[in-house]
Image (cartoon, rainbow, N blue to C red; front, side):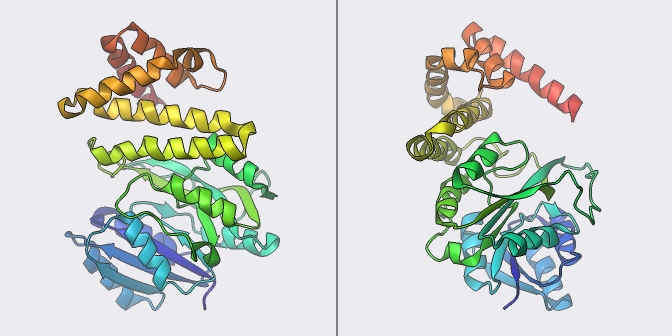
Length: 329
């Protein structure tokens, strides 16, 4: 049994796949296996996976009919042999000492779950940090409570609720699977993972590079599946409210961020006109909280003010926000 199983769900990502796989194979820590789960790709992704399987004994390729990223993750976990499991999306990549740093946290703290962070990388732009062979003194690793783990992820600076960016004791998946056929499923699963874990470690070390693609599942055109975002974030909000009321404000803020994200996605799409209208009413019902609460960011506050002024004002405000964000990035 190897120390770490790296599971990569893959579907039609031939442009990004080599960068991802090479970043994993070139790790300073080599006690790992790499499981590539080709989820019904119709481009060259499957062939690239087979190519790496022939080149390296560390790589195993699983081919299956397209069932979605959750099914691919579940399959990867099922066939894995590592003591610990981590996920890397096929269009992302990791720093050369990523596995070494996470494994060091496991050994030092006897951790069931290590939570690290990520850098957002715009598509086509090379990340600035790729050679962090040593952990900087400013990067702190510590054992945290369940409440502190939720708090760090919900604060959402670099440590988020996604499946990736973490190292899991394989026992955590004995009873837990990713819900298949859904998107934004990570939030539903991470709650169960955290509650199952005995010892959780958070590190400020950041070695995961999240490539923000315009054609990814979450950034693609609006579909009814995208509405699962609000459902899952409401489940998370209710859970945090019941068991960790001190940090409910963070889950509530997360929920309304999701509202604005979906509002922008469905704007001007005729088939979602009724849903769009209901969502606007839902947001405006909470306008006092969204404008006056100190917990709300300037983006949601400004969006609410623009909505109160009318849809044309909201659309203009959103265009201005995207322009400023693009300029800053």
